Image: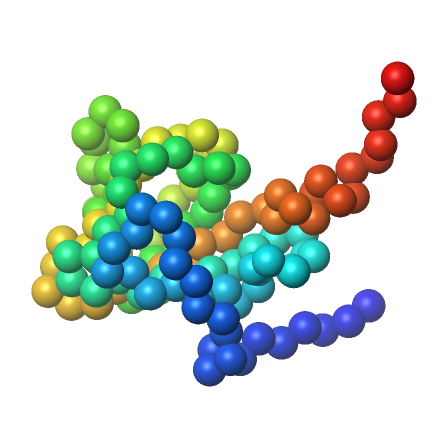
Length: 125
């Protein structure tokens, strides 16, 4: 058993494809991370957005502050305020946008596909 701590001041920044005006950091995740779940903290500036596209795996969003608009492939919008959460199943097509004049922050929580693949038993022929 162990406890792993990530200080926000030391969390590594990254830039996911299709995101503009968003400053995410990995609280738990990244290239060499082997935990079962990844957690990113994304800061959306006014007008910041994640383009319409599918989520790679089941994804949980938790808005911490501000307001974000979640839009699905059919154009249905859901406005999420502080402490609102959304669950997106594997492959759900979505966009996220900050349509306000204030910044917004959101946790993005996902299973770590790399760790799951590493732990999967080898198949036999």
